[in-house]
Length: 134
Image (cartoon, rainbow, N blue to C red; front, side, top):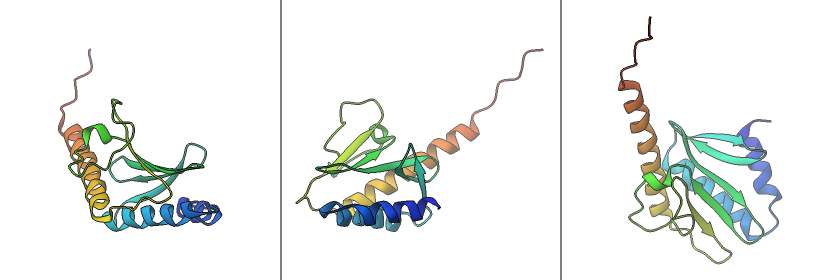
């Protein structure tokens, strides 16, 4: 079973409001970047990547957590991050039962994370390599 099918299965098995929230988050991510790749990592975590990991989603008992892998390096002008803001790398958005997803703002954040990854890839590919010692 591929990653997309595993994510479909995960969403279908969520028993309550988390099913719709998770499905909406997934749809928004895919609409924000049609080239994004769905992956399945770390013993069952849906991951979206483009030029590197963009974000990871997990459903917990009381929330759906969306973690941006390089979130500390990606601007959040709409202040969506509501957890993990003290960390050095990751930033998260925790969605609880009655939270509304700010769709436009989330799409912008996903696009910014992809842009960061692609710029970082380009920078790495333009860095000259050191010659091996003889």
